[in-house]
Image (tube, rainbow, N blue to C red; front, side):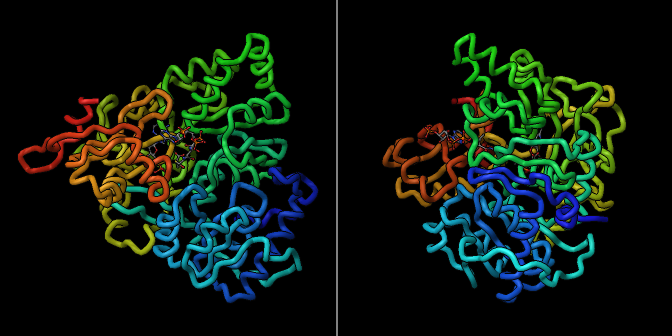
Length: 489
Ligand code: MCA
Ligand code: AMP
C-alpha cells in the first residue's frame, strides 16, 4: 500500500498547493518536507514521537505533516484559533517532543511549554534523501483532538492504514482524479479539512488551493475564476455563502451562479444539512449538495451517491469497506427499518485508540468490536437518516464539536458565576449555538462574560446566549434538566 506522502515524486511537475504566497509543485512539496524531516531527525526525532505543529493552512503545514510521517513520527496538528491553555493541553496530553510553529503564532509560541519549540522559518529546505524509517501501514500517524461527554478533549489516534481507508473510499466514491482542483477553506486539525480535502487531493495528484480563513466573498470570487472542480464545507459555510449571494445585485447574482458551472461536486458534512440550505443552494448554483456522515474516530462512514440519488435529509449508504448497524438502548441490534437507535461502525477507517486512555477506548466499543458513535439514526429504504445525538452535553456549532462540560468547567472559574449549565440551542446559521444558564449573585452580563472568556476559551465555544436564574432546575437525582432550561430560550 502506497501512503499519501510516498507518491509526491510521481506527480512532480503538477501543482500540489496554492496558498497566499504562491504555487508549489509536488516536487517542491517533497523537497520542503525532506528539509524539515532532516531537521527533525537532526534534533533527535524518533519513530513514534509526537510532533505538534501550529501552522496556518498553507504549503508549510503540508510539508511539516509529511516530514513527520517520513520519520515514522506522529503528527499532532493544533487548532490555530485555540487559546494558549487549550494548545498547551494538547501538547501535554500527547506528550509532544516538539512544537513547530508558523511565524504568525510567535505570540502563542513564547507562552507554550514543550521540550523544543521551533519556528518553521528557522528550518531550512532541502537536502534530499533523508534517511526515512521503514513504515508499516499499522503504524500510528496522527492524533486529532475531539471533545466528548467526559470533560477534556481526547486524542484520537489514527494509523496510516485507517487514514488510507477513508482516503481510498472517498477517492473511489467521489471520483477524485489528477484533474481536480479543490478550494480549501476549513481548519486542518479535523478530519474534514485534513483527510477529506487535503489528503484526498494529494493522494491523486490534484491541486489543493488554501484560503487562510473562510471568507464568503473570496470563495465566490474563486468559483467565478472557473478553475475549481470541487468544494466541501460545513452547512454553516453554505448558509454564509447563500447570505452573501442574496445581498448582491441581480446582475452580480447571475455572474456568481454562473461561476459554479465548472465545479463537478459540492459536498456538505460535519453537521446536519438543513433542507432550506440544500434547496436554496441547488436553486442558486444548480448543484445538489452531496451530504455525507463521518466522525473523527471513524473517518467517513456513510455518503449519498455521486451519480445516483442524493436524498434530502438523509446521509446515504455505507461507504466501501464500512459496516454500519443500528442498536437499541440495551445494545440489541435493530434489524427492522424505521426504528431509531445508535449508529455503530466497524471497518478499516476506525481509529486505533484514544491516546493514553485505555478505559475510554474500551468503553467506546461494544464487546464485539463495533464503535458506538452516540448518534441516533434510522434506516429508511436503504438510506440512513440522522435523528440527533444521545447526549445533550455534545454541541455542534459551525461544524465544531463542543463539550458542554468543558465549557461549564471554564465558566465556573468566573468570579461572578456560582453554578452553570451549558447546552446547544438550534440555530439556522450555526446548526446550534452555545447557550448558558447561570446562577450569579452578581447578575453577570453576557457581554462581560464574553470579554472575560476571550483568551480562555476558543471563540466557537463562548456562549452566545445567557440566562440568569435563581437556581438551576434539577430532577429527583439532582441532575440539571437541560431540556427544561432550553425551553426558556
Ligand atoms: C464564530 N462566531 C460564532 C461562532 N463562531 N457565533 C456563533 N457560534 C459560533 N460557533 C462569530 C464570531 O464571534 C464572530 O462574531 C463571527 O461569528 C465571525 O467569526 P469568525 O471566526 O470569523 O467566523 P467564521 O470564520 O465565519 O467561521 C465560521 C466557520 C468556522 C468558517 C463556519 O466555524 C469553521 O471553520 N467551521 C468548520 C469546523 C470544522 O472544520 N469542523 C469539522 C469537524 P463577531 O463578528 O460578532 O465578532 S467535524 C469532522 O471533521 C467530522 C469527521 C466530519 O464529519 O466532518
Ligand atoms: P467530530 O466528532 O467533530 O468528528 O464530529 C462528528 C459528528 O458530527 C458526528 O458524530 C455527528 O454527530 C456529526 N455529523 C457529521 N456529519 C453529519 C451529518 N451529515 N449530519 C448530521 N450530523 C453529522
